[in-house]
Structure formats: C-alpha cells, structure tokens
Length: 194
Image (cartoon, rainbow, N blue to C red; front, side, top):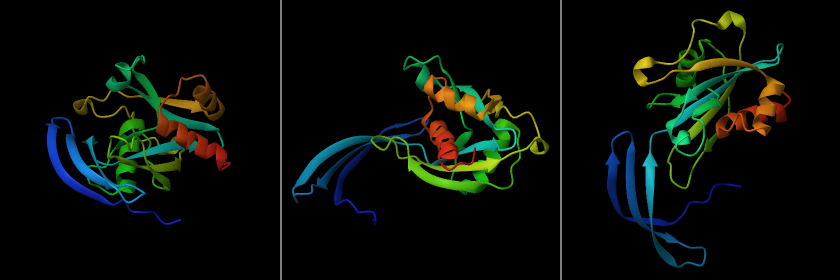
C-alpha cells in the first residue's frame, strides 16, 4: 500500500531552544478524514537522522553490544547505564558509511560488509529522527582497536560481547531496554540468522 500524504497547512513555527539540538513549536491545520480542518500545535525536537548496527558472529552465536550512560533514561527512573547496539547521528552523511565509522569508534570492530534491514521512526509523536537499521557479521580478525567512543564527545563506552540467547533473555528480564537494540535482536531471531 503506497503512503498516503497528510493535508497540512503550517501556520506558524517558533524556535523554543537551539542549544543541543533544535526544539520548535509548530501551529498548523490538519485536514481530518471527514474533510474538516482542525488547528493543532506540537513541539518538535529535531536532532537529525541516525543509524544503528548490530554486529553478530553466527559461528560463535554472539553479538557485540555497548553499555553507556544515558542521562534521559537516568532521569526516568533507570540506573542510567543502557545496554544497546552501537548507534550515532548521521551528521548529514551517507547512512552506510556513517554506521561503519560508528561501529569502529564504539566497538573497535572494522566491518566492511553491512546490510541495511529497514528504516524506522522511533518516537514520531515528538522527534523527527529516522533511524537506519543495519546488521553485519563480525570476526576477531576485524578488531582494529579498543572502541569505547570519543572522549571529547562525552562518550565512555564499554564493549560487551554477549551470547545471542543471553541477549534475548536480557530483553525478557529488562536488562536490555533499548528499543532499537530489541528490534535488531528480534530481527536476527525472526529471520533465522542466529
């Protein structure tokens, strides 16, 4: 089924914050399904698009995950250290090239062959970001460094190699609570890759 375009008239936009990323308030009219135009307003956070990758080793039945501090989850009653697949913003670069660089920065693994599996909006009610989801098989010979991220960008990333079945159980017990990571782990399971 082809995507249906909404009928929208943007009446006003106002910048509320331009500190870390861009937060705007929009006033617009949306044409409802019955033909009536309804005025609404929304705050929209624009941080650009991103990409995420799950590295897996089929013969060893392992995946590479990262653990790092995430302040927004910390202030939402989480311990703050989130177990997740490597990810980063595109910074207006090609998603495939950017995710290869991000994987190496965060995990130390230099992967040449990546497979794009889908694209998704993670919080479409308030955030513009679209994520490009990738998977790639890794092996010990691709380890080019320690990973850990870039200190100047505030990154302090722990690299974790985890058994795939243990990672799937970590979803059930809440140890893995990151949506993009859950989606990629379930993708590997549903497609019979692992």
